[in-house]
Length: 176
Image (cartoon, rainbow, N blue to C red; front, side, top):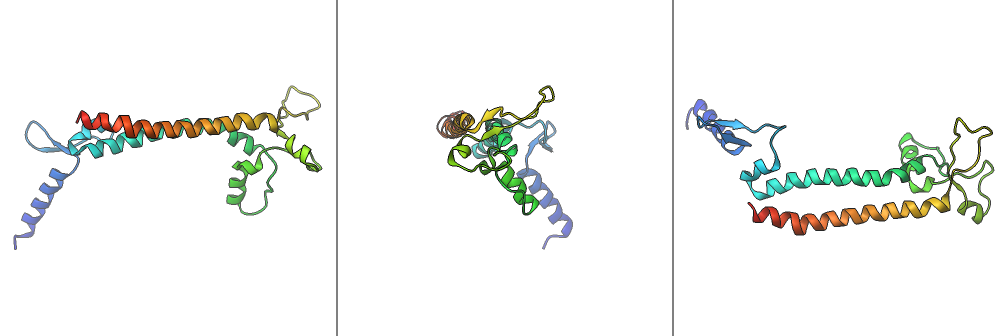
């Protein structure tokens, strides 16, 4: 068996050869920068590595867009009062943001189907309004827009997946 010093030197050499490194002008291995290395710079590790990091970056952008599309629904859900706040803090938080909490019934509650259907989706007490009350947005007026935003989010995601699979991947593979 070789001495431990030789084994350790061989292990370090192997680590540098197989890590995210490139040879410099002197022939020594240098680690690639965590902050300035692009997915294209990782192409020497294989097309799959490059595509993985590009996919992660693009999915982050898609999810930011989807979050913006979901924001009106989440805000209206958070302002609703249809779900009781009983139970654990986690249950209360999740139920407040769910579609089950959409809308506000009057103090006595919604007593008929028509009252449930026409309940207020957003009730804001503006500081410049005296007397308060009043409904700024009815649920039946908001649901169509919220449904369209949800549908648009699904469409954006499907288009991204199809574009990435059928255009982006073949283009990267062809140019690698």
